[in-house]
Amino acid sequence: MKEIVSTKLLKEILKQYYQSLYQDSQNPHQKVAWCSSVGPSEILISIGFKVYFPENHGALLGATRESNKYISIANAMGYSPEICSYLTSDVGAFIKKETPLTKAYGIPSIPEPDVLVYSTNQCREIQDWFLFYSREYNVPAFGVFPPWKIDELTEEQIGFVEKQFKSLINSLEKITGKKLDIDRLKEVVSLSGEASKLWRKFLETAKNSPSPITFFDGCIHMAPVVMLRGTNIAVEYYKALNEEIAKRVDGKVGAIEKENLRFYWEGMPVWGKLRFFSELFSKFNTCVVASTYCNSWIFDNFSSENPLRSLAEGYTQIFINRSETKKEALLKEMIDEYKVDGIVFHDAKTCPNNSNSRFGLPQRMIKKFGIPYLIINGDLNDLRCFSEEQTITAVESFVEQIIESKKEIRG
Image (tube, rainbow, N blue to C red; front, side, top):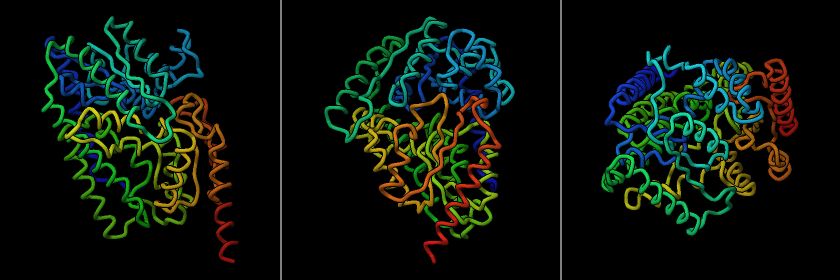
């Protein structure tokens, strides 16, 4: 995988984010909120909270391959090995009072929360995860519960979530003793929307052939749109990143040496195996050009004109929260736009909500649209659920199958 030079800037941005967050959290007058990754962080920022995202900590535990030494600790406490391994690895690390942030950024511990805010738009287990910390720190946890598995989003559904946001704001104002500044909220939502548009622009460069980026690049460079949306930092970062990638597009420089096939990745990454997968697909001259996961942070509807309602719409209509019928249609759009040869479904053992291979979607995609698929068994963090050998064999067979199929079509 060709190195993206902006990665150096990304590392510096993340270092500053975590060090500043920890330093600010030591000020007794500064309130800290923990927020789910697709939660209403714009509201928290606008009321004056510093925001920390436990899911990113979970991903970091996976990417550094430290998660497995913590999962068993949570299992021993009664948290099943069948549930979210972000949750179990994060809780286990908390019990051991350890964090990879110490080695990466010199931070002695994660910042303590004054409040926890989550949305169940991605999954239900986030509630149990955040309630664990609510009990441990003796601080309140507030949830937003959007309608689940929606088909077409209705005004009533958006209004239902907007109403929950207003109730959440009332609760948060009591913690900070400050009223929400609506002008500040408009500014933050506007910055979030701008970062989101730039993030979309980055991902859509993969529509070019050869693609200048891969899904694995997306997994690395998505951090600002997750943790720093609502800030100028994220906006400026994606401007710089897009400027660099535009040069690749102009020069027809591909992310891999020889792009022969183009795949779509459906589901969570296997965080501890990003390099393995990147090198594996590159070996077979295959570029993974698009994914559901990275697209989860594209919010086209965010608007400063009606900030709360646009947040309600954007956070409710994400892919993972849609009906099977809608997912099928959205996948078909992506397959066509990115000219994909096949779909790789990652069936993550502990993440049924982000595994879309369990209700016949792969079979419907090939039956209705002729799009071949491969299902890989694994997990986002628990590497005991993943086999390199089986995956290599499966990917190799899948690639050969598609190549042979193309030869037959060409005659």
